Amino acid sequence: KRILREGVNMGNDKELNKEKDFDIIVKLSSDYYESFVSIVSHHIDEVVVTEEDVLEALKQKSVTFGLDYQAISNIAEKPNFASDILVAKGLRHVNGEDGVITFLIDIEGEAKPKKLEDGSVDFKNMDFVHSVKKGQVLATRTMPTEGKKGTTVTARNVMAKNGKIVNFKFGKNVEISEDQLSIIASADGTINYSAGKVSIIEVLEIRGDVGVKTGNITFPGKVIVQGNVTSGYVVESEDTIEI
Image (tube, rainbow, N blue to C red; front, side):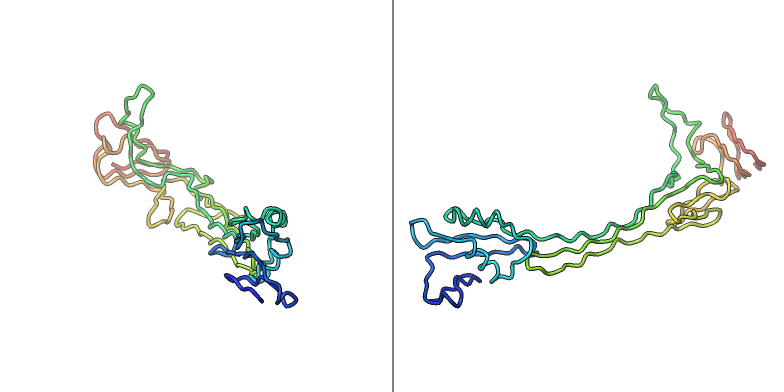
């Protein structure tokens, strides 16, 4: 008599008349990267299970890759204690990582008073202008990595996704380095960051007063102030200043 259990053939063509007193239950994880074995006995007495029995049951479920022969041997030694024993483990695929851009400059452009050591704040130094010098590195990027394919316990290859490349967005007075991994200021000026694009402005135009909203202004290029420079505040430039 040939006994078939849950997806498991308990005999082979030479054992059609030999009845087994146990079932070998083979389970596969949902991603097919792991396989587990349980022994279900039909008698109170301890059953005899060989390694070949377990290997045959695994073969019937197409589990051929990543077999843990020590675990299989342990099952054969103590079959009555075998419940969901991990007997095979595949090689999981690893998707590649996307490239990442890291800015080395402040792209927020938000003026904030400088906090002093005594806990007070200096409203004269607000970092209203984020100046850069020619040759200064503005941002760097890492390149994406390739994915590594995996293999399930049923010896099926699982392809992995490669990471996505990220490209710099830049405009006037910004250039990309020779190795394509960074962008560099090609002129002195201040940062303009809009719609994800970095540019360098050589002329600073303030559409209002220089005062509590801006703090002092220090800029290497030409400065145009549309309003006034209020009392106690300073505008400094290596070029011309128009007020």
